[in-house]
Image (cartoon, rainbow over all chains, first blue to last red):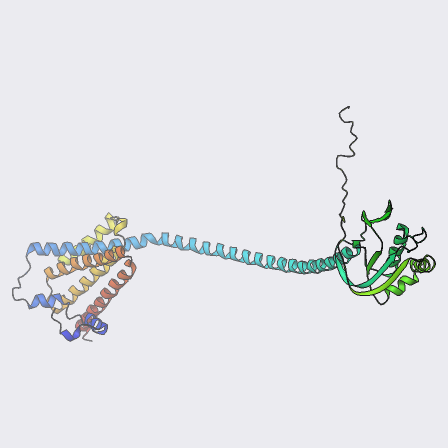
Amino acid sequence: MSTPAGHRGTPQDLLARIVRDEDDDEYALAAARPERTPPDTPSLVVFGAVIAVGAVLVTVSALQTRASEPQDAADREALVQSIEAEQGQVARFSAQVDTLGARLDALRGQSAELAASLADTESRLDEVEAAVGAEAVEGPGVRVTVDDAESGTDEGTILDTDLQLLVNGLWQAGAEAIAINGQRLTTLTAIRTAGQAITVNFRSLSPPYVVNAIGDPDVLPANLLDTAAGQTFTDLAANFGIGFGVEARDDLQLPAGSGVVLRQATSSAAGPDRGDEGAS
Amino acid sequence: MIALLGMIAGIVAGLFLEPSVPTGLQPYLPIAVVAALDATFGALRAYLDGIFDERVFVISFVSNVLVAGFIVYLGDQLGVGGQLSTGVVVVFGIRIFSNVAAIRRRLLHA
């Protein structure tokens, strides 16, 4: 194993040394030794035994490789089958992905339609709520002020029927929302007399009555004066001296009406309760 | 002569006795075979060179097989058994090739 120092170090040198194989030639080294003796019988027996062991090794190795061949082939076959099964699974899943994607597209389209429908319904709800008085509204309109005549006669006193007439005239003239002295008129509002006072939404009001109506201020006053209500109030003002004024306003604010509740009826599944079940 | 007898005896023994290799030793069998082949080709080359020595052959054979098996065992313990097996096979393969090349030069003078 005497190697020049320069031969060590780089991988190229290592490879070259392995290929050249000079260092590992044990036989040359043994032959160079002077005390070489001819082989005796025991060492020959050992030599033969080692040869036999080597032959056994090669034979057993070959036998074993051959014996494991069917097993390897079976393993390979099983793997191939497994791969094919998984590929079938992949194909099924991708088909499923396609189907679900198509369904998703359909549902997306449906969702867009529903969203449009919802927006439509919501805008209609806003309109309806303004009309029935459930929502506070603001905007341009007219303010109609009516008052009892200063003379204090019965003919000069504003009655609930007068206010009903005026309000209906305003509806007829195109008003979208009406409030009297801050009481919003809803679909459930009654204007009637209770004692000496007129009540709206069960609240007693005292004159003067300020009727705010949301609507087009350019046409609403003229339309109102064209109606029977407008004629009547003009006559009343001329003949009995009641106060009657109509003025256009740019920004009227009407509160939400109180007491607008939604009542729902459901049919009783058990039938009408007769109350005499305990007797039968 | 003795070599031929030993070889025939070994092949016959392996074929007819079919000794089953313990599972733990199975990975080392191919490595041992390659190491044995290396020692055999080295011996053949020395024989053709006229410097064959039974003692050197026995020692190189046994030590080759044991060291190769030990290296692979060590690699198994360190988790690089496959790579070390490959390395051992490569080194023995190179040695076998160079020995065979020397034998070829000796026999064919080419």
